[in-house]
Image (tube, chains in turn purple, brown):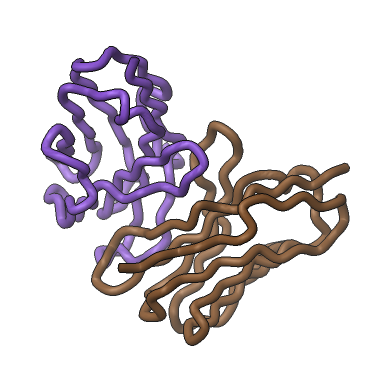
Length: 115
Length: 112
């Protein structure tokens, strides 16, 4: 595809349930990022992958959050025992250069609502 | 830790006006600064990227400048149009961090 894609676009779940959010980066991009955006705020960093490995997961709020990128392309963000405070838009971005400092391109996001 | 601030939080201007959006950051050791546009309910669209060695970048009616010594960046929009209405976010890389640190954005409304 031409850009970063994310599925689903919307996810409604009940408190305590498990959810998976998927990100397909731009083909050939080595770096992949997950961010979370609350209403009226800028995105906040969650985790960064360089290839298959998580190079920096310092933004994950707690151990209920986990992300994988097994083949260095598609990534899945997994949230266990969801809480109402997890409700937000989850954004994925990718970039080309291995340093990760180059321009980041964002997907449309997944809006997660925890009831 | 890098902190990015955008003031004002909201701005309303009549169509045709030239305008400037401000972004300030606390850590002057940035690697680059990126400006984004976000339409309601949508993801982020990259507008301009300024590398730390550059002073400005231009794309069409947009011009972004970077002054590392003062910790400031500005986004200049010429001849604003109603279609420019959106939230504009700035973000920087700094230190050893690969991730972007974002401001809270400026919500721009251009009135016809």
